[in-house]
Length: 378
Image (tube, rainbow, N blue to C red; front, side, top):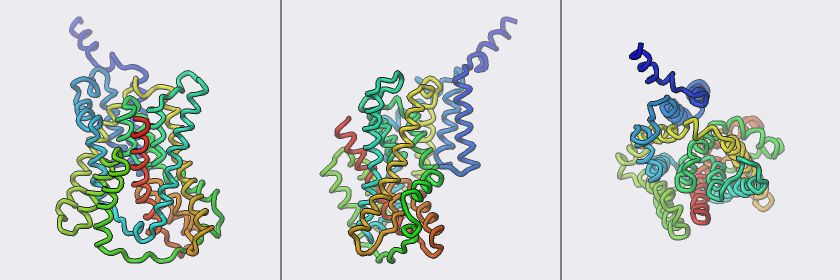
């Protein structure tokens, strides 16, 4: 009997706590929506499974010498994983639509309003003195970056400013990226008329290879000189794009956008999942982070649409305001949503390529915003 009792006391069932059961249920839900609903499955499945492993009682996989903790220490405090993700994203990105219509850079910039607006909102919430809802400046900046709808950038900033909030911020960032088709259309319709949604934009001009090669070089140097804190993100993004456009290193470009990014995505998801342990996640701050993250994302969407409407006051060639919502950097889902809502108003109106301009600009904008926050807050 003593041996049986000892065996029972060594099991996870003996040591399991209600919080761990709850977090296991949350992780199973992440895996469910990733598989059943198709919501960001490439990351939600590894994150959810990492969370399952982190909440197995006694196993301690997310602590000390645990396997998940070792992955975390290698990839997130060092920022290696988010940077390699940016390399792969750069190798998959076509800057052509943005170069063909440079004014879409303004839409990508406007969509970053959600980041800075939420930063002020989090600090205002802190000033109310509500117990459990008090954020330091570093924590507020990490929460605000969710508004860029860019998971790797959110992880990059949070790992430097508030690593203890990495779990809820990463889950919020990728959850809102996955929910783009649900969250954005009501905002887009509320801020535009049917006639505005039906605006047909001019066909984009062809962009030559020389322009596409020069742009990532100029982008890297310009951002690096003006905002060194953003240089790692923008630099790896530009390198990946240069590999794509150079035309002489197809093997490297193919590895960056396929094998490398796939491997890193698995490890990144597991590392983030390791921070979904019950003691780290089940706090009142977590709910506040999820709510503030939604505010940031919705504000960024609205700012992009309103900027497009403002541009139409001054531009001869009208911009369909729907593409402004693609200024958040959820590539390419936000652009697809712009196209879908546009087709509802005018079945002959194809906005996908036009929306890719602000969508790509949003990636650059969120990286620049991250550099600004790191420079002033870090």
